[in-house]
Image (cartoon, rainbow, N blue to C red; front, side):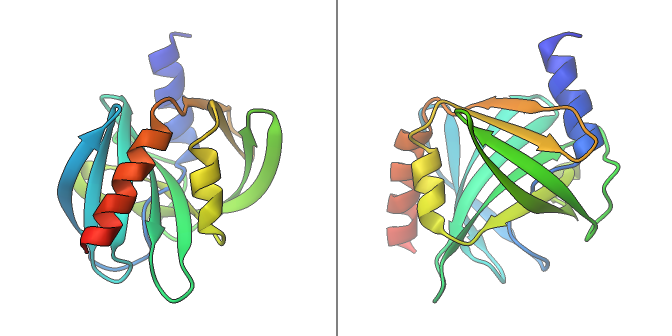
Length: 167
């Protein structure tokens, strides 16, 4: 299967990872860095996020919500439809350069026709550590692995910090 089709099919089946929780969100582009777009978000979980299109129909996001107990998230969206409905959860295995973590992803409908799911990370330092790695592989329960390059992520997260400071 062609790599682009494999990502799209896996994302559609998986319906993984979205940005922040329920409620109306607004997005304003803050800038771009190392192949990532940086957005300032408003709404119930305001903060900043980085976003990269993996294919024309698949988008990966990471962000940090700077609240009293800051937390991060990773998210994956697709325009091709998903099997995970809004609010539904699925178990997910995250492999970061060979180190594995498990978590839960929650389905969500996103802006511009994207649907997918998000996984909260209770330690925002995890997001910054992730940025120094090379590859993130996301495997949903019963789904195909989705392999993501983390190239440029460290530089993009430095821009995210500038976005956070500007809020």
